[in-house]
Amino acid sequence: MVSRDFTITNKMGMHMRPAQVFVTAMGKYASEITIKFNGRDVNGKSIMMLMSACIKCGAEITVVCSGPDEEAMMAEAASMIESGFGEE
Image (cartoon, rainbow, N blue to C red; front, side):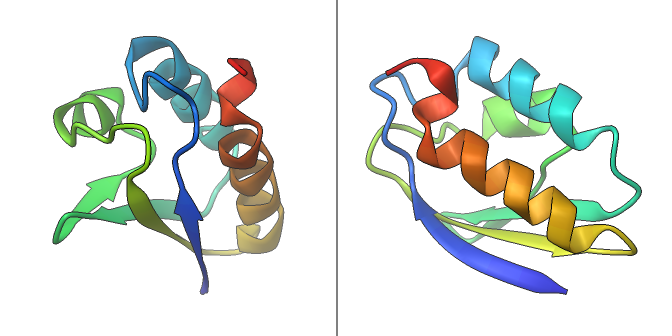
């Protein structure tokens, strides 16, 4: 299991487009991904769960990856989050 903290920097937060891009990218991995936000554990492979979490700009989240390809999954998740999901 690997875990890392992030701050959401894109202006619109985790709205429909970045949520869809994120879920699609994470879906190719065998590992599980959980986003911890506001006391909730959100399935990072579920667009509905990500949308319902209401993760806004400036939100502090923790991403947890667990499974056989967790390191590669975390690397891609980190790249996407740190780049503002390509919106900045």
